[in-house]
Length: 120
Ligand code: 5GP
Image 1: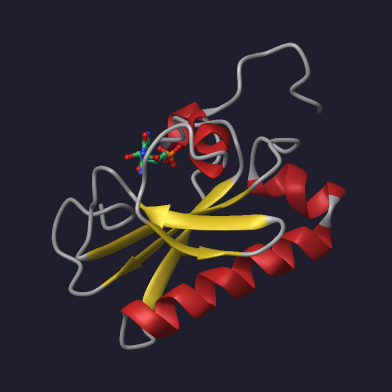
Image 2: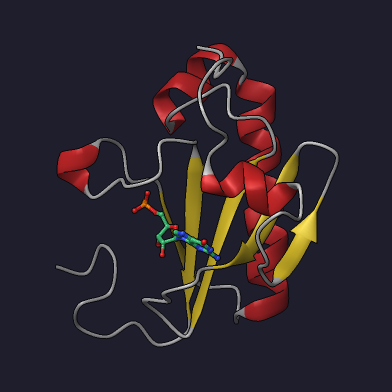
């Protein structure tokens, strides 16, 4: 479960300010930033600062309180950046489109058109 010995994920590097990103919310254990390749007018990645969990199922099993914090930060971001109507997407596994194996949610808001995450 621990990432000891492997290179830090891109999201860990963003959390450490080693890689620039537009950070829109942050708590002790959660960070949210604009996606570099937005699929919707509002597209924010919400992730844990630790990379102990690869996906939402692992996080739910291992630390449900942290998952609840992540969802709460997602709601706060959506309250600020959308009209309160949004998608919360957790891609889980390569075949489902997951490319970064450090648990994260996508907050998608604004007008969602064809080709947006989860609209197919
Ligand atoms: P996944 O495909 O794993 O569900 O989501 C990974 C997301 O991370 C993608 O939407 C991708 O655009 C975003 N992403 C990957 N690298 C970076 C980066 O360096 N900066 C930011 N802000 N987003 C990134």
